[in-house]
Length: 112
Image 1 (tube, helix red, strand yellow):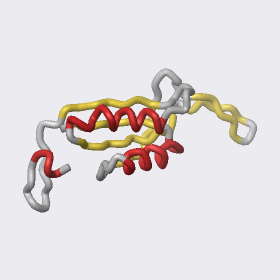
Image 2 (image 1 turned 30 degrees about the vertical axis):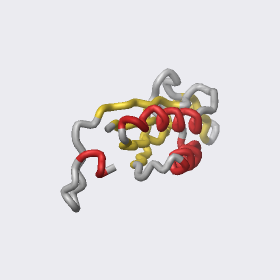
Image 3 (image 1 turned 180 degrees about the vertical axis):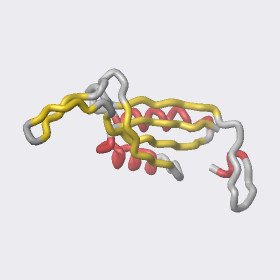
Image 4 (image 1 turned 60 degrees about the vertical axis):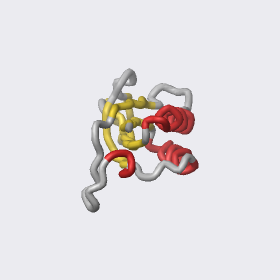
């Protein structure tokens, strides 16, 4: 089992969700986050004053999938989230040791 964590542009969330739904990926966690990478923020103007936005708003998407689907899910997220501009985001893939469904006590890949 793999945990896929993607940091993407907020306006690309619907595109990514649709791509994952088309692959029959069931369940995801979405969190609004702020951070920076190579962008290191940007300048904005508000009421005539310039200020620096150090942390850029992003969406953190977490999806647990069977190991054999991980590559296809990563590719689907990358394709749906890509704009070709700086700040498109990153995707991280982790190995999952164990998964437990609290309600039923089921464990392993049958939980996904």
